[in-house]
Amino acid sequence: MAYSELQKNRALDYFFNISNNVDQTVAEFGYPERSTLWLWVKKDPRFDEEKNLNKVKYPLDMRIKAVKMMLDNHMSGIEVTRQLGIDNHVSVYLWKKAYLAGGIEALAPKRDW
Image 1 (spheres, rainbow, N blue to C red):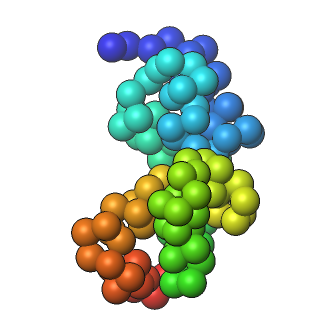
Image 2 (image 1 turned 60 degrees about the vertical axis):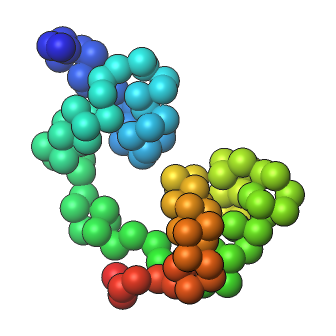
């Protein structure tokens, strides 16, 4: 689907000035696809590749705590991220999935950033 420059600019402005989150931006506007927005973001001069590559590395104990909050307290990933100050709720869901598949060892950070 083709988007007007106005639509593209509105989505990009929202992303860079308000959400800094692809999923939240797509949910706000109902367009574009996640992959399309990500392409727009990477081509935009406001995109800071260094910042994007230097993601926060959460320690194992915080990952365990987040997963236990979801499993034991039946909290959503968004609730957990708000309480623990984690930047991205998707990470919490991925930690839960890893934990259920491989236990605590699967939660250990895989590499140094």
